[in-house]
Image (cartoon, rainbow, N blue to C red; front, side):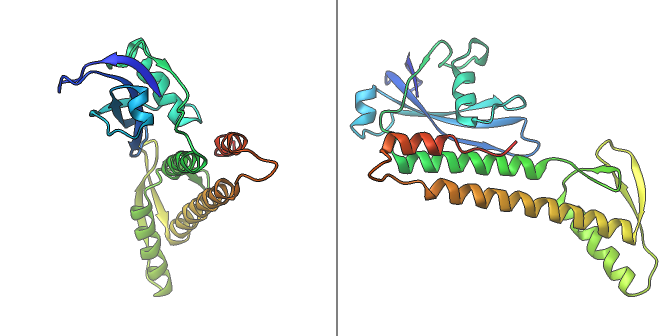
Length: 220
């Protein structure tokens, strides 16, 4: 949560601001952060509706594993050019275990999608992770091979050079991408299970459970 006095265009003074949502698309170098603003922390904790909402473009090329923390720290930085520059970060006193789980799962999904967009290698060649193009070409290669027909596909690599792939090579590229993506989805499901398996108990307080959930992130 960010604390700083800010009077938005609707002229309703605000002091308490929360990053509600972050969205991004390949190549994940920029994200759109939606920030909702409240009159005060007391109003936020009392369940009052936000009085202003706005979206900001946030660079993500050097983002930390803790995506939400990265966004908040960038927003309060002098270089951000946002109304929150110079603000201070405070703990969200409304944070519950369920909210923490949703926040961390959103972070994991963001990390999952970034991994899916990363280039990959097959037979010493580096490819963009264009699932639609590669899957279509691999299927065409398999069908041609099955029918005993010749197959050759000119394919643009990650560095924009062009190579000609035969049926076996094109099928191998498709399988490599499919296997890589399957592993990524498996990791995401594993992390989701870990997140939602954490609960309070006689020996684990809600604060301790929230700390355990917050520590879950994509493996190095």
